[in-house]
Length: 336
Image (tube, rainbow, N blue to C red; front, top):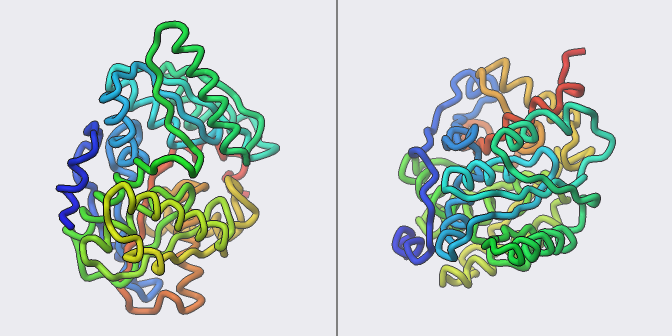
């Protein structure tokens, strides 16, 4: 299957500024006994970058095709997705409505006012609040209620859904992203990446397999335990296979999830996450975010300790960006 040919069947708004680099982490490679590389998807360009830019190319492409003038999206208070969606909407001449869910309890002033929240306000986005953090259907329904109001006002809204029951258009961005990586370096032994909604993980795994790349992809859980996340990934992969027209058997048995860095939960900084974030900053001068990429690096360290990833292997770590969230976690990240 020719990936570019299949992806050309879907409307796409070009938001990526360029191919993102792949860098060898020399000092960490020596320290960990690995041949460690990092795919810098924190450098996707739009609005401080991050992995959501790839996903939004396909959501915004469909929105433009439908003649939308406003996009609506839901996410956590410090969501990189909603911040990048607001920037994409602005770039394409649309308005944006951002619904912020209270997924992380007992957070302070910085969390609710700085980081991604501040950036979205600077972009002029309308903000809504949703009191629950584990209610995807309810969050989507709240967006549709606001969309109905906009329709009544003569607007043309487009909803980017959170729930698992909708076509995973965003995953197409990482089908393309995996093909991009495989064209840059194709002799790696494993990929380690975050696994949250399933769109990045599912798209990346699909893209590698369609490109003929057999390396295992380890999804580090950032929101659910490994069994819940594996089940979610299989649903995403089934819908993605249906959209793209390939046999889901190509990917279904290759879902690997690891949750050893998940505690104390989504959006919370455990000891292994803090140590991973600090190690990357002080060894390579690269900042990770506390919600996704730092847990991903903590996951790589855990997989190495368990022997799942072995010394001497060539491993690619996917940096999904999200550094603005660091400023929302100042209270927790200040050196003691």
